[in-house]
Image (cartoon, rainbow, N blue to C red; front, side):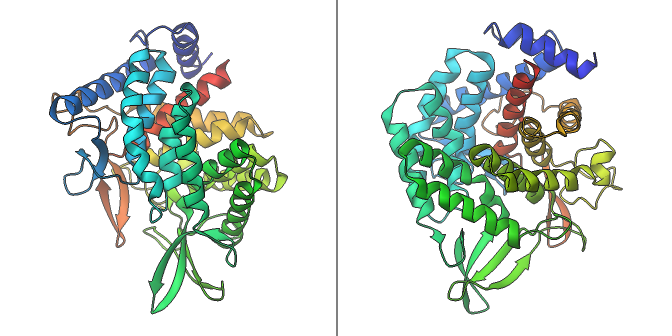
Length: 396
């Protein structure tokens, strides 16, 4: 038995299955203990300085996660992290804390301008509804799905953000929109209104048709003429030409895998496996390293890793392994990604929890073809915790 298998077996088998609190008896237990300690400190700091109506969001100016009172696209991840910690530990205090932060996010359901509103709501209310019979949570999610559906353009076959590009009104469809579709599938099942799932399926098909190249590398954004539905332009966020933005590939894999889970359509499984194949064949992945912002940057040993990419890919591969004949390869790759991420030094738990809100160090990204670093993202914490839950399921 490998160290990673033994670690998961020991931690999940002994600690989580019996519902005990996480203990630091092994490397993974220490890791979750540090994450739990960080969440605990951040929560107490928010309660000390503000109130439950304040939530955490990435702040690029301070390169930290600061407390704010205005909803933002990643607000739901703070609440989602509390819910996932409850699921990981079974400690009721995390459920109580998550409930405190859930309802203040209700305002976000009306955020028709956000390209990730579905993601925000499912990370918070979508988690809450699993553990609470509060009918308000269901109503919020259904209304949020209606708002998201209202942004669907039937001529184009996708939902996105209306913009003006070179004096032409366009619908800008970002690959990150693939993280929204879980909300639509949930709403279809919950309400019996198949229009939600029809919109989700058509959106995914449009993205697969127009965002991807023959090798399954994807564009970040495709702009469509709002009048004719024709493509006005395709745009990428990567450093080198003929390369691919790693986070875009990660969310594409995640979204298409979700689509197969909810529809069992063979076309989505085929595309998910093709996207996974593209990712697994990248040199930086074959070298068992965590990708940075661009797959072409595999010869840059000092370049910061993008943890968000690693954890989203890991989570998607764990789920995809349950549907694919390539399960062993997917699990092996996901295990290596998590092992590498967990081997990085965690931030020392600080007294200034309102500043050190994220559990991970900074991610990397590109801006105007220049490698920089970005502030810690609560999204990374969320998908890391989700990956651990996927792995526990596979172990047992």
